[in-house]
Length: 515
Image 1 (cartoon, rainbow, N blue to C red):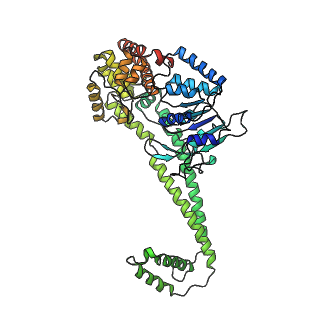
Image 2 (image 1 turned 45 degrees about the vertical axis):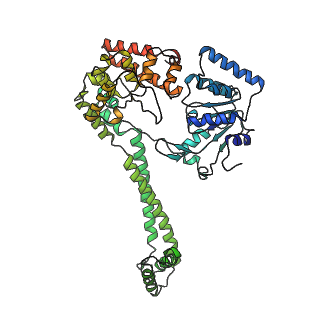
Image 3 (image 1 turned 90 degrees about the horizontal axis):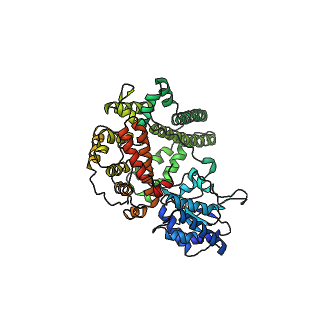
């Protein structure tokens, strides 16, 4: 095989072990590799092609325009037994690809790692296009648990005696594989987030003692405390062992007469004699000093026992150094959840959500909102959502908790969203952390157009987002509107407004995945 084999090379080499899940770490690469393979391979016989066409026909009968202008290549690839699957596909297309795969009509499926999470789709083989991924901050090697989550899809019960896992080695990163150990799979770490809703819920439903127990006995605290105790016990044992070993050293250790010390001096002398260090300032003087020290007579003793002990002590010290580093890491990442709780509580008091332990109207509303609760509450209580036309209210709420990707583009809306920008700036100035008031104007025009009756193809023409991302924008807003409807309580005007907005959005293709 070539130093950096193509996907065609890989499939050719493992063609006896299909179907295969071919994992990549970008949406675009799943499509690129599927297209590349489609120019070389066709896995289906005429009967299987007819079965694929029939399943596609049924899907399109229920959902005209299923493939749309962007996915015509996927229709062709599926009829060759090749597919791709990622979060950018519409839910209906993902469902079709999954049904074809389950029907054994897709022999090579290019997919992102999300395909390996939560859904049981085994294969005869799995292939890794790479063992490096972008984690949002940097390119890094896969964790053991990430690798085995995907590799574990190889091997179908009742079909394959063994599952086969292959990694395409990039000649630029020859060390990217061979280091995954199942016994070293990283544990799942608990992570408690103290959000405004967390604080409001605890204060509303729990006693002081129950809150204290919740903050002190959650999984994250337990895991950190347990690991810290284990490290302390190991350090105690290592220090005791090192102490026992050092008892064999005599008082002359480190003196010129000590053979251990003299061995170190000889090693240093050898280093100083190398060409790259020979002419450095101070080298000549240090060599003379070492020669002078070596003139001292060596002590007659059984020094080999000391050499062995020192080697063992050095290994113990290396291990202790690593453990101390881990302790510092745990301390750095440990959270004082009691302090976090108090900080958010004081913030909510300043903003008028709480008085002592009593929830005020803002707090009672935010109690039932589970995403960006402060921002959503302020949009309601500031009157902004009532003072703008419904289409603008829909546009505003679409941006709640939205974090645009680097290259995402959407046509701007026909109206001004400066009031929301100003409200968000006021919240930040009043000490609300950035993560508690995340909002973007980018999806506004999409939600507005959908509210006014635009078709899904029209939405796609307004942006460079993929179908799945547009679905996600609209479904998340529908879910937020449900929360707001519940939070409205006896405020019938607000409840009617958000209900009308939700019903206008929850239609056609988007409603298919609704509840």
